[in-house]
Image (cartoon, rainbow, N blue to C red; front, side, top):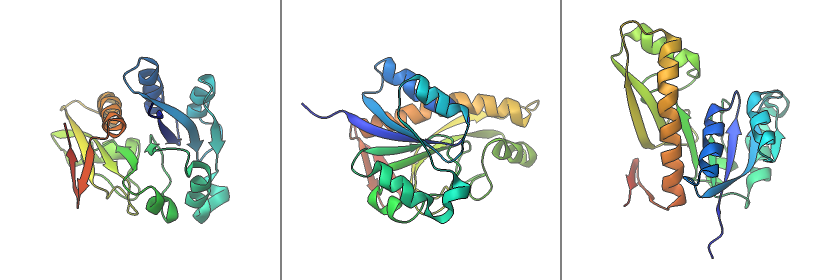
Length: 206
């Protein structure tokens, strides 16, 4: 019997995407286990979500670990998980962690990359920029994490209309609904071994 697919989830905030993953494991949609939740900040609600579901948690404060943060994460996850999922994670990953888990770290970003992505583009700031620019369509992107900032190959994207009356907050809520769908779909592709990456193209095999 094949071992169950194991993931680590990295968080920096409230953890709504983490909760969505937990709920869909419990419902049977995702055939995997969350082996650990790692946070780069103390006292965030995502940690309570994990603890409430008996998931092991680690806090690696980014201000304490600084440039060695990625190496500390690697010590925790190496040979213990198949996939690392960034779900509202705000710290930049690099070095040996990226190399050891090449093409097996994914991130959810609240825009249609390459729009409104890169350094400084996270959370509500992304939606503020989308409103300010006047785009008619926004959305979310699940992508492979490489050594850059939101620069890895795109796995999938989901779009939402930007309405005339939208504020950054109302747009954020609409995009978040699609984030929950997209992230689950991407994780499922990995569980079912459907992902093939050729250069920058991600092919989803049936």
